[in-house]
Length: 164
Image (cartoon, rainbow, N blue to C red; front, side, top):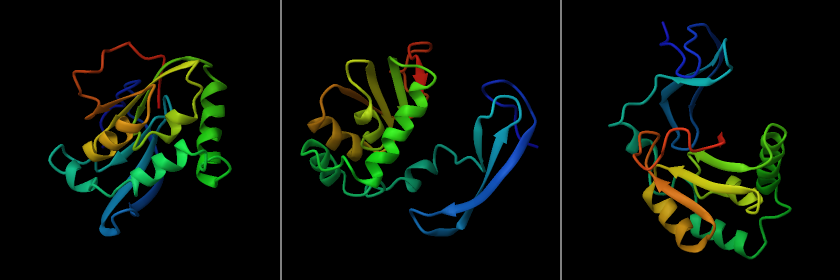
């Protein structure tokens, strides 16, 4: 039995799919994705332990971060399918809330945050891979990057208008 939902305390889940790790190519690692019947939150099982997580996010997990940052700064990302996907996510978010302080959990280099209008959004990215955020933070201004996970003491409860 799955534990209660951390958002709404519901215990009913609907199975969505079963997947393997496509980035690492680990077919021995199988994950089941469930959707909470109360609030719709997605949940992955088995959930990796704190000790397992570093092995799931090697330094090259996000690809060539330096190249992605450079392409963004030169305006070369606009018009790509990758950038269109980020702007679609922005439209979805802004159909619910149009501005505020946002936390993007697992932000990688921060493309989604870059796509948000900095005049309307105070953008914060949370990323587990220190190399990824070090590279992005060095070159991208007006986005705050935090290394760690949701247990980071740098995250104040109730300080975000949106969490993605």
